Length: 151
Image: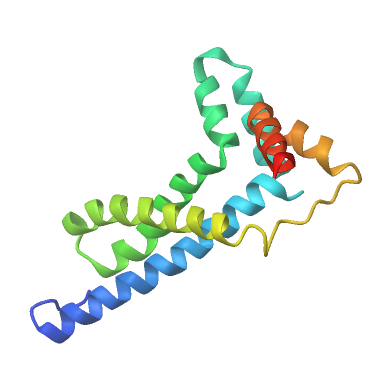
């Protein structure tokens, strides 16, 4: 644990948490890319589709296939690992929720900002139809395609 009774200790703790938040955001970004776009993440997508078939837990399947939703869960998981090592339990719980959601949002912003520079490669021959069938929301994809064609 870090001694936060001194100004140097407090500054060191804040710096460590900010660095950990940045590392968590990168880890969330990579995890979402792997689970939603790679062949390795196929089991995750298959599991989400199976959950969608069960009416009682269909919302969990929707959440498993939604990149925005999984970013929040990965953010909470990764942030908890570092925060519980640095802080006492009673302080770590609220910081984990705040930091986890912040890491998820930073990962989403990074993905949005660098989307045109570092896209996930498409491994299929017919990329447009593959993205439409693998997409968690085909209607959203169709709307984005039509708006890009108008420009």
